[in-house]
Image 1 (spheres, rainbow over the protein chains, first blue to last red):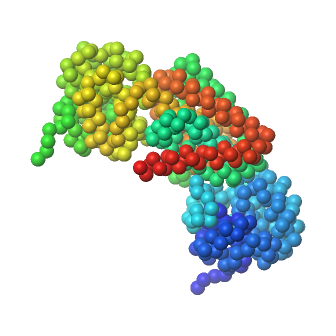
Image 2 (tube, rainbow over the protein chains, first blue to last red):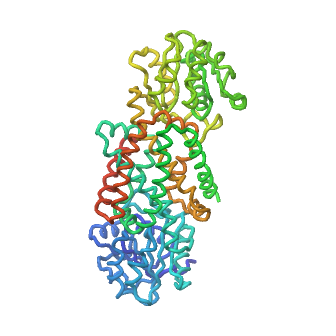
Image 3 (cartoon, each protein chain N blue to C red):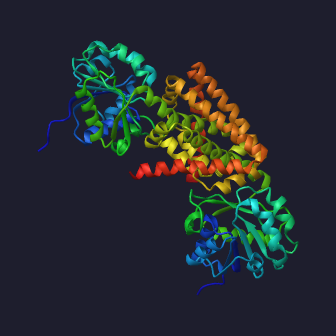
Length: 295
Length: 295
């Protein structure tokens, strides 16, 4: 006996890595009665239909959301305001609107003001991804055992939060509700700064002379290899992350700069004691991450 | 019918991750008639004997090398000069001396001058490792399908280079002979800079307030998680790498700094075009690394 799906009609706006993975996961776990996919480009839509990612596909965002119980915005954050303006007149009363963007506070400045009072906004962020993008990149297991962070406003309807929580939990995710600004500060450290650094270091290598660059690729030790993977992530998404989480990123980048300057000075001076002390200290955090994985 | 081993008597000085992995690999592939292990500390030697890593164990470096056809120095680079001075009078004519250090040019400044003319010095660097250290960390497969780079001086005996090449190849490694100074420049980019950056970023997170630090550990996205792994590597080894490869590291760090400043400025100014352009460019290097892996 199969129960009713969690949502009768779900609309995915955008069908990249996260959108297509959500489609796979929702279909696998029977979470949606019907899935409508809306995209900006015909080519992407055709591919989504070919892949069987939707019940219905359309380029008309208004038509896409009119019957939706749940709208999940899976586009780069730079177009949230346009999308909100376009779908707002068509959303039905009681509909839930969520997103999957990596920065959460700006959602209240771009998307929230465009939406009518009769819908529930529950911003979300699945902390999961790969270096691949597009509708072909998705797979059902992407969210399993990974965090999804929800950052609704204080006054948000508790039932709406619960339904979005259940959706992610049934996709295999662990869910935590937190303040949007705080989310952005934590992620600036755990995700945005590492990505910026990886992009920088791989860019530095790209600027080397051709012969040296070939050797860098050939002999990429594990350090550099990991950085190249990180630095192959979707450029549009990361542009929008740095544009929208500017203050938190610049703040943590300032601290990083100070620490790097200190290590650089230790190297220049040949201060082995200082280097050893620093390199020993970082092992503690690693132990914390290992313990957290096991927990 | 089993052939004669490649070397009758091999001496390992130091028995950490690389030394113990070499012991496992040499025994697995029948490359050494006998393996002598010499360490500074009784405790480490006891453990090496317990683990069956050697035929003979001793704290006396002179006694350890007197019958050796091949001496492999597997200690931090900071003690090369002392070790060279200690073993030099005991080395037999025609013995080969090699090492596994991550920086190669300084070997000609520290170790080489201490050695007698009747031995062959073939410095080496297996580009392989894990974040674990000590005699328990070793395993035979560590070098398989990884590069080992040899950096002998121009006038070095070709047979000695060939024998060391064969040793590494039979441990599963791919071997390339290159100039020592050039090696250090390439590795500064592919390995030393990434490690320094990872140490810095994890250190920056370590300095956060306790609550924020807990959340950083809890929600460590893939970016930060990879960095913590890199930043858990052996502190003594990395101290010595930065002290000995100072100039190449500072040079590449200078370029990195310039590039990071440029990206920081783009974020501050909200220059999305510049960010997008940079983030797209780095994908090319990644493709190069993927192609190199498949080749």
